[in-house]
Length: 192
Image (cartoon, rainbow, N blue to C red; front, side, top):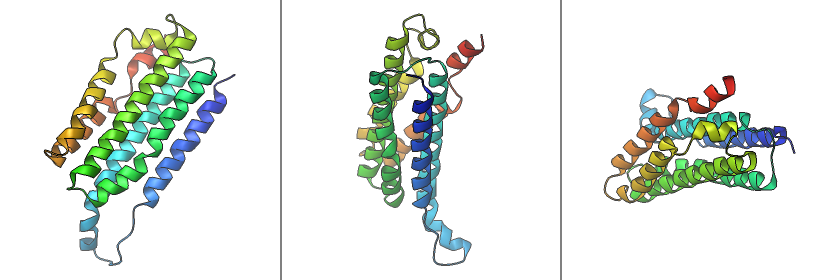
């Protein structure tokens, strides 16, 4: 099976996720700029989630560029990733509305952790299908430092939300900053 349908389906799901997130932004009833002030936490959560979805879309794109074929395991691993990403609009809305409560911040971390685990599973599934000498296997290498650090940060952010919601937010922003620059390992392998 070719990878075109997988890419098109994934892009479509991610586009729907982004659309759902923006539809959750509600305009204030008042027409003054002061009416926007209470929406700052909601917008902050939206921007953070938009960045995360963008990072996943970008890295998913690069990873699929390094693949030549697809099997059933890869399809299920990809659906697993899309499942976790589809929960992002829900936790974004909950966290945006209750920005000082620990449970929504922790739930956001659980969803990000689930997505990171799913992405790791997808990359390992692709490597298993294509072999240790494949482009993706060579790009990732033996250890995925950014991936491992991200998983550890998400794991720590969940209980830390009950200590300080702002500390959890700082961890989410730091993790996004780590991934904001696309993973050049794959891109450099594809161009060489």
